[in-house]
Length: 331
Ligand SMILES: [Zn+2]
Image (tube, rainbow, N blue to C red; front, side, top):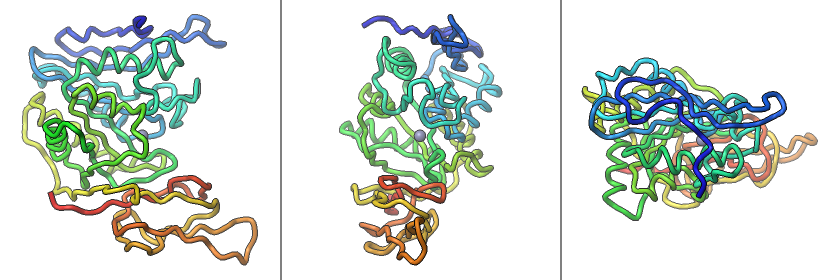
């Protein structure tokens, strides 16, 4: 396979703090020999594990970029034993445009792995993570939130994996992150995900869903900042005690967790995030908006659970994810 067209202006093997860019040539109307400049920080001090920290995999999710731009400016090499690679906005064109996918090629970074060195801009970024950055990492933390069209209870998550030792280590990191909720996460479609790429390489991979609605709150931003520091402490890269609040563990036992809208309209949620619902009960009503005098359609729970994610904003389309339920479990 041809080499990546991306070149880093930082040296991943050098000790100290370096702020630079992953530079991806991108010739276009407003810049003939131009580039996409993806900010990156590397902090290295001697030998030790490598943490790869990413936000902005989806461009309209903000807790990760807030925590990582903040960490990148504060971290001293003398604080670190090992290496920290920080990319606050992985799909940088999407982040600049405040959209989930890239405005250049409509690429969804988390459906683009393993990527291609001769593909679209998004595929070229994915390929660089696949073949250059992931192999450097021992622990990978990828921040997500709901973006403009979902809102989540704040949780850190890992996946059930075939390798039980790898899975147990990942859940130890989830516990260390110390979010208000911790999740055993089920994906709707794991093909092409960064998560899957990292896990198949044998890396410890954890992710988050920390809120949503196209912005971050003071609470969710502070959960993100505290969580990333805790992860680095648990990895032995930073010194100090883990500062976690008690977490509630959630499981997504089956596809029955997901409730999709079959009709479009005005959505009224009957429970809020964290609220409980019984199997068969209505989670939300969808009012047809074309005329008055029409009964709303009920979106019903297919299992007992608590509401962990909901559609955002107020109108919904057929096929949209309306609600996600989880089950509280004792770990
Ligand atoms: Zn996301």
